[in-house]
Image 1 (cartoon, rainbow, N blue to C red):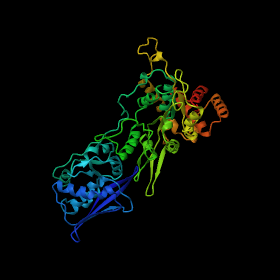
Image 2 (cartoon, one colour):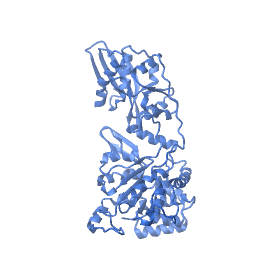
Image 3 (tube, helix red, strand yellow):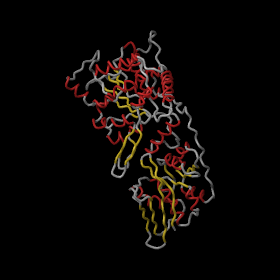
Image 4 (cartoon, rainbow, N blue to C red):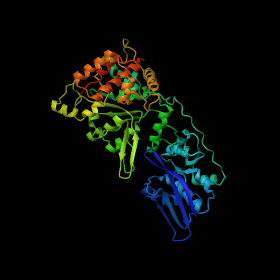
Length: 512
């Protein structure tokens, strides 16, 4: 008997329908064969499925069983086919009577344990979004990961704990209660920040640069001796970023669902991503890759922050691999059997020391590096990468007086909450400006949007021309300066970019 069960394959963020065709034949030698370009994980499903069926109280038919994963020319790589294969075998062997019309409206997806329970499985959200396009669809997914699908409307979500419970549901014996839809709230970020701006002593210029970077989604480079607060400044950034909108949250959650980074029971990513990879990371880990490419750090930081501490310590080829995603906001991973595109629109926050020993320019400690060593150290970061960084700020050693626990003359420090209010107001202006465009922040503007949406006063334009001529800035730097000035103007709720805004943008254009 031949049975067709519906499922999906995830190729990056693209979802492709897959039909699991199961035939249980009485003619031929008993056996269990899976065809259709299955990976090693799917080939091993034969033992998982067989044991799960037996341990769930059903009989495994001692016949010739053939499973075809169609389309046959698409490589399959997921343990999520365990559940549809098991259901197909039970239906084809007559242990589960379900009409073909009912099965056409059902999608099965999940990995089986040997005892028949369903394990957490990645990619549930992508299945739900695909099923949403098929009116009247029902998806059967593992209970631990089912909440991912609740943010999608228009589908019926059945959370499955084990194979026996699912069969009873399909036989109308013990019905499983479908999950209710979860509304994505605009203000989904209600958690307190781990680090607050007010905890950092001094560094007012760096804090200002951080606010500008957060408001416009700009790239920021902080350089200074060790222990001046560069890492802690970067760690405060999540606390001043605006909460994810519902559209942004769904976009980020899709990436984390494919990567299998959604914790069991969670429905959606609630905070803007903040990724801080170690400097020993490979290019595949940064950009994404593998035989079946998964998202890298640049994609996991989408609509959030990628923090590179001690940037020159990263391998040069890894840093150079950032050039395309920093410019295009996406990354393409090309393999022999696949061509996958992941979004990668992130803000790069980098921290570096002024020299290999770190003490160059320190008021109290002596640098022992030679000019040649310092030059070689700086050359680890190429010109094209520096050209893509919007803000560069020095983080100097802090005076002892500012470190004192009690200082009655100290000026009240800005808190992350106060900075976040400024950032949200600036982002609101940008949302209004880009209402009909597929961009969110000033940093994402292309040259044509800069020319159309950024208005400079004559004084600001003259100042920009003088700076470009004197310092020989590239065309890319020219437009990036305008974007930064536009963000500074947004923080002041000014429709035009004045010479004051342009002057502040120019002071952050420092070259190592």
